[in-house]
Structures are given as structure tokens and as C-alpha cells.
Amino acid sequence: MTDLFSPVKLGSIAMSNRMVMAPLTRNRSNMEGVPQPINVTYYEQRASAGLIITEATPISAMGHGYPLLPGIYTDAQVAGWKKITDAVHAKGGKIVIQLWHVGRISHPSLLNGAQPVAPSAIKPAGKAFTYTGLVDYVEPRALDVSELPGIVADYVHATKCALAAGFDGVEIHSANGYLLDQFLRDGTNKRTDNYGGSFENRTRLLMEVTKAVVAVAGSDKVGVRLSPVNPFNDMKDSNPQSLFNYVTEQLNQFNLAYLHVVEGGIHGGGVADPFDFDAMRKLCKSPYMANLSYDKARGNAAIASGHADAVAYGVPFIANPDLVERFRQDAPLNAADSKSFYGGSEKGYTDYPFLNA
Image 1: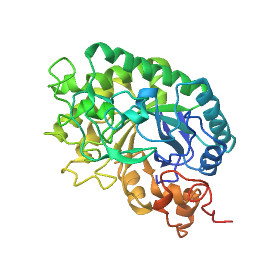
Image 2: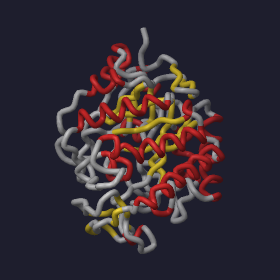
Image 3: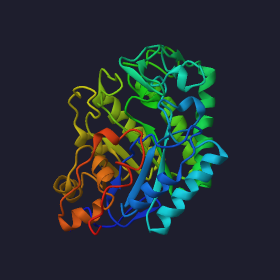
């Protein structure tokens, strides 16, 4: 029977099992966005996952929205990531990088004084996480249509950097209230040009980015992440089911390595609208990766039923570097220390025990 421990191929990515380490922001890079030795250890420890998706990684200086994020746009960053991909590959693992532009979820203090950008000048509720603590978000600047090719070019440059760094592929982050998601959903996109209004227009930037990234990396090395009803980062849409069914159908043209879907709301961002993920999944012609609060039993059921080809686990992989083996043995899991999720040192990062420790 096909289960979490069965091998699978997502595009060109041959996985030894179907358990994916979900992208997890940990804020432990340096000020220049260069991965550090501690980051190498962290990812190397988790190389038994069928696939690691890195923490969300800004594609440009304007893509940053939190302190101490790694980037993927300078030579020094590429060199730092190369140490990570080499370490994961040496352990037999596979790793892709998640390409990120935060859009309005930032603050001038994180952008060398620049105003955050967005599809429309709508200030998000909540506070930005900055080097000096939590501060109110500011109203973003609406991107001029003439600037959008530059955003696409930033994704292309980051993809080239990712390939140079030795990644097995890239994941385009179009979820959780960041820039591409801000264009998709009508709560944040009030544009009246070719990038606002209709589903086709609101989806245009994601399609342009995906087409450009696929042209560089090949469709078999590109995934896309969506979160149709995640309210995190003050997000909403008037008709999420129809919108994301449309997005899924439009992405089929690219023959992607996978579609990664956050099946609900995360981060305590509020109550998610109802959504039929089975209906969306049936429209998807690529391998489908399910994510959100799956345990072993639900993961196996999703694989066995055909709902998912792979299942992404977040917090369990933070606390259990050998999560695959623990699931295999039905061993107890380490509890995660949420206080050390964002920023800090080895504590709560690389010091969680292995089964055989």
C-alpha cells in the first residue's frame, strides 16, 4: 500500500519518502542574509525528510520583512546556501528553496528606509517584527505597472542563484499574505489596471513569475505554494473557492513539479473561510502536496486516498530532526519550544534529541 514511506517523484525530484519538511522561518541568518554554520547543521540534521523546503527566502533587498532572514540574491548568500545543499545531499536528502517577496508585510526600518510595496496602498492590521521590536505596519506604496517586470526579473535572478547554490528546485511562495498572494486576493488588490479586478488580472503576476522561473529552472524543478483561505497577515477574498480553483487550473499549463497547498488558516491569524480542498485538488494535474496540522494517521490517509502525493510537516520537523524514523517506529515525539521558533541560538534549533541520542 502507498503511504508516507513510499518513494515518489515530484517532477525531477526523486524522494525516498513522502514526508516533506515545510518552509519554516527561523530568523537565524546574519545581517547580510548569509546562511551561517548553525543553519548548515539544522538542515543537515533533517536530511532524512523526503524533501526539505527551506525557510522562505527573500529574492531581493526589497523582499525582506523580518530580521535575520537569509537571502538568495548575492554571491555571498549563494556561497552560504551551497554549504547547506552540499550537506543535505551528502546525507542523501533533497532540498528546494522557497522564493519570497513579502510585499506590504514589512517596515521601512527593514528596507533601508524604503516604503514597503504592494498591489494597492492598503495598510495591514497588526505589527511588523523589526530589529527594535514590534511596530505598527505602515501604509505600503502601490506598485506602478512599470515596476512589475522588475519584480519578475528579481524572481529570475533568485532562481539562477538557487541553481548556482545547488538546490534541487525552487518553490514560488504565493501564500500566507505575502506579495503574490496580495495580488491574488481582492481584499488586498484594488487595482484597476491589467493586474486587478478579474481572476485573470489578479492572477497575472503569479503566472508571469511562474513562466519566467520555469524558463530558467525547468518545470520539473518548480513548485508553487498557495493558501486559499489563510487569514494570516490580514488577508481575505470575496470568493476564494472560485478564485483558487481558477488559479489551480491556470497553473496546470506549466506542468509543475508540485502544487503545495496550505489547507486552512495558520499562525493564529483568525478564522479561515470554508473551502473545499478536495474540489481544488481534483483540478490539479501536478503532484499535490498537502499541508496543515497533519499527523501520521492523517498523512497516510491522504496518501492512500489519492488526495495528496506528499504531505508537508512544519512544527514536528522543528522538534524532531528524525521525524521520518519516529513516524516509522511510532516513537514518541519531542515537544516543540515555541519561544525559540523565531531567532536565537542553538537552543530550540539544533539541540533537539534524536531517537538514538
